Length: 291
Image (cartoon, rainbow, N blue to C red; front, side):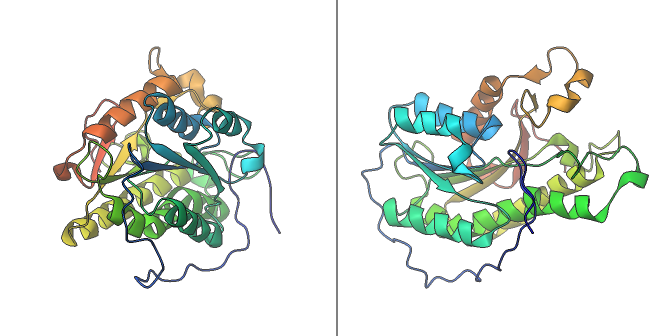
């Protein structure tokens, strides 16, 4: 059985990913024709993900973008960008709960480009009517909500990193002004254990904490293997998107950001990261957030 609703994920039937194997036929040749680099934005149909795609395309006349989302046929704004940047934008179907779509996207990127320089994990789930809501008390915590939040906010993004790993390793900083490839996963300040003073939102908090730990662990492995990849986690602030809209009445004046402002700040962090930043958790203003 598959549940459906606009713009978010639900659990569906799926198969396991095959363990990573160097035997997969990823291209080992770096094609220098991709001046400006190759970026992938996972979760690009709307909100922060869509804005990442826009700014990556509009802020420069170089570089290629691979945009993925669960239901491309309904991503009208993404297709508007495709019409405008036909040669620089590719759109692929990727559902974080269906492992084969992650693998297929990796193969498609490999076949066309041979590598990646940037991976942005922008997807997230917080609230879906009659499916999942932020909990205000322990009495409202349910197994299904915990599992769904973890599936989409933590498990899916780490499996995307796993499958794009050979492409990121092959790309490094090629064609960009960075010294290494960058994995930037959109987390949230509420995922910080040390910064948790209000409680509540059990499923969302825990899933973002899980994303933080998984990404941090991956960053350690990449550093140990001397792979030219920097992994960071980013808190975008409270941004005016569908995800935050039900909770905006509690946001202090001046603290509700536009998508344009937030992504501009996040891209500035991405473009200035150094090897020493690998595995760190940054807020939109560049300040580190405690784990």
